[in-house]
Image (cartoon, rainbow, N blue to C red; front, side, top):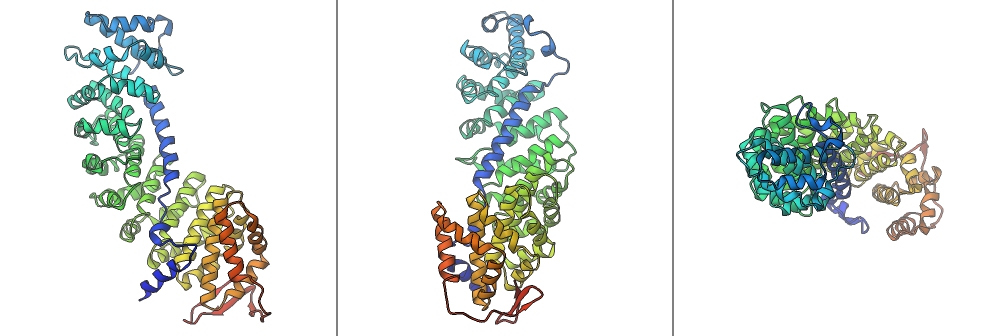
Length: 509
């Protein structure tokens, strides 16, 4: 009966119209921004790094032949000439600044490099060609497509399956191709790249090979519109679960990024990731990792799981995610604070029991403090969390919210230049006023809003250019602040108005 009442209460407000499913925010636009940032960093890193130690890249670039001479040498029938030309192409394309990728592509260098991948009689030639193609594929979309259209994918997958140094370099090239977008990602998977990659996704693999393999897997999971075919990447989940226990930070970070991409979607994907043996508690433990490079994708993955069903949220809470989330709300890195508040907002969009676990941990005081944070994005995420509690919290939980003195900094966001922040606060105030109205306390709350200057801010928003904000303001003003006959003000106690709800519970403003 209580759940039915709560559901009807949630859906009763005409301008809210959302249930807890919609309140849990998957934040697609934020996910896209994070993926793009991570992809750019990873691709640049993979192009600049070398799988060899002390190679010829450090020699003066003037010793290299011209691009035209390199392409001519690649087309030679002499194996030694082809190999030296492929090495020269690799060295030229490995320059840290402004590698001549476009010049090499326009000169016709891709086709002979792809053909060189077939030369099983010379592993050195295959290795140099795979490396050169890796760096071409790390460039623009057109550069990557030149490699794809040249027929490199099936050849690279075959070399990957054979292992060794050439296989590792082929994994690197395939990772760059897959990272270009969903079409190239799917083309790599369709050629059987994942089965060929799995033997390298084990803790016992050599470090360089393992790091390349995990990063390549993260690219196979990345990108949306459309999402990756989950069945094609899911076989690696037990391997990723085992890798979450290793010490290598680069591999851990890329494994967590892969999980963040896989959980950024429908709940059935979250379910498959969560129920992989050993994975969830290991992932939650990484929220306390010493490196922000690991904590960031781990938090994104756990946060995505908290957008799922109530059962999936409970699994995260049972795995112990609340203490590290509370710690992240107090860390010095704004991006982690923001993500932590976003994750907490999804807990506070859940059941009363889930909300209680957050409150018992001390989340409300931390969120109230974030409303004064210097970073407006952190403020907005904290406001989202509080607004969710205002909508779905029980009376006693709202009482505990008011006990942390949140209202004044919360309503200051009504003057934020970010209209979405103002809209979030207006929603929260509407829910609070509805709750106050049900328990005969609306006048007390209205008086308090006027005392702290919130009413002036609400009135100022009547002229806002955003139509949704205008409608929210009109609803609040017409419903709760319309002129009525004078009524006796409620009795004040210790600067707070205390009212007894019909159920016997008390809420203080």
